[in-house]
Amino acid sequence: MFVESVVRWGAWSILLQFGLGVSAGFCPPRCACRPDTMEVNCSGKHLTSVPESLPSDMKRLDLSQNKLKTLGRRQFLGLTQLQEMDLSDNVISMIEVEAFQGLQNLRILCIKNNRLKIIPVGVFSGLFSLQFLDLSENEILVFLDYTFRDMGNLQLLEAGENDLVFISQRAFTGLQNLQELNLDRSNLTSIPTEALSQLQSLTRLRLLRLTISSLPNNVFRRLHRLRSLLISHWPSLDTLASNSLIGLNLTSLVISRSNLSAVPYSALRHLVYLRYLDLSYNPITSIQGNLLGDLLRLQELHLVGGNLLRIEPGAFRGLTYFRVLNVSSNQLTTLEEGAFHSVGNLQVLRLDGNPLACDCRLLWVVRRRFRLNFDGRQPTCLSPDMVREREFQGFSEKELPRVFICRPSRIIDRRRQEANIEEGTNILFSCKADGDPAPTITWISSQKTLLSPTGRIRVLSDGTLEVRYAQVQDSGMYQCTAGNAAGNDTLSVSLQVKGFPRNRTMPFFTEQGWIESSFPPTANSSAQVANPYPFDAKTLIIATTMGFLSFLSSVAICFVFMFFWSQSKGQIKHTATIDFVPRASMGGGGEGGDTGRFTMKLI
Image (cartoon, rainbow, N blue to C red; front, side, top):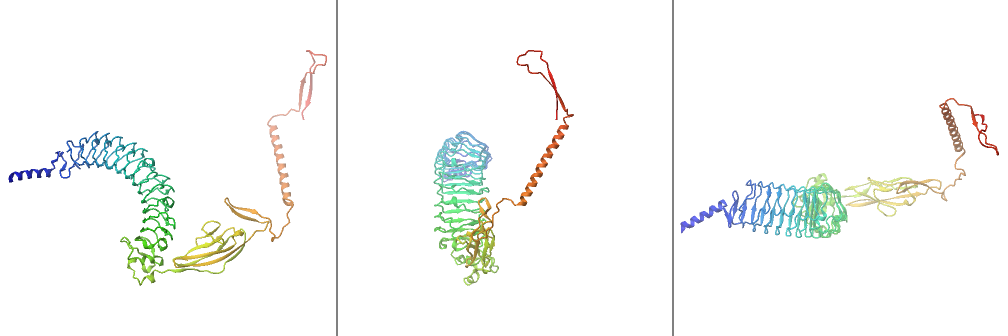
């Protein structure tokens, strides 16, 4: 008995070692079989066709990394228990209709990295249980109508890295349970809106490396269950229409490595469920104040590797759930506490890779340096020189009052500035200030409105106020404010503009530009006697003389022309002889009347 048991055990061991069988059938040549997992592995065996006599009860078949070129009709008929099949990394260029017929339990099918150019309708017929399909890294040009018609249980479709130029409107018909779609690196020139609208259950959509330049309005309509949208590596994308994302209930949005020059506030304002926003690697220069307040549930904002120069006060006002801000590798010199709704809610802050000026504006960050999570990358100072390249965590409490300080704004020249000018005159008012950090100069008009760098009354880059073509209504007091984080300083100037006399012209600014208009003299202006004639005597003499000379010139030219014309006609005759027949008398008539002749002299 002992010997018989040893023999049986040895035979079974040899069978397992060489993979010569599974529970119901023999293992194909050059393949390895594992009865415990019901797996047949034929990967990398240089096969040019699908092996015959495959075990009918196997659950996993690996045919990857071979030289398969064609899959015939009903190629795998009889493998009713098969759940996973890998056909990736072959040279398959043709799959016949109903090639996978009979694989009613197949759940995972991978045809990645082959040479497919087109998928005929009916290829996937019979794959009712399929949940994952990978068609990436092929050469597919188009998805035809009803290509995926019988795949009602498919949940994930990988279709990236193809040569797709067109997706038919009904290509995705039948994919009522598809949850994730990846369309990466294709030749699509626009979003296939109508085709995507068939995917009512889609929750994740990934679109990488496309050459589309804009997202038009309603481009993702009817994708009400979409929760995650990933757009990345679109170098031409510079515009999002204001309603491009309308109808979506996204919780995660990534638009990175594109060409957005500003945060697309109008397109984002509808996304009230958004929690995660990533706009990294776009040439965005600022985050403006009070424009993200509609994103009530926003928790994370990532804007890495951009051109951020400024985050304005109130930028995150109203975002009560805001927890994570990552603005590393930008051009920020500071981040003021006033940008946040509540800094007490902030948990993760990434400021590394920015040229930070360590002054009073960053004191709130340094004081929280042991509680805030910098994700293992401590912010460092670039200025002032005495603390250059020092990490925030390295400062002691005693150093903070001496290092992180600011010098209040101070207007340098406070001499009284008053101007009394006439209409149409240009005038400049100076307002120069110093402080640390450098103060911001603002001007308030006589009507208590904030003046901008554009318009007839404008603020120049150096803080000077310019009033061009002054008008009476410009009169009043103007106030300059120089402010920084440490305090403000103000200066008032006076402008009085006198109206034009009646007989003078004054320029006015219209939509067409500057024009001049005449006004009657005012009561205070000196009256002048109006000239009853439109021209003076000198003007009349000059005009008369010029008119007479013009008349003589015209007559002379006519005579010369007539002289040369007559010479061209030859010798001129001065007489002409005319024959005539006299009219018959009242009583006579008939023939035989005498004829007459007379000679006429030509003058």
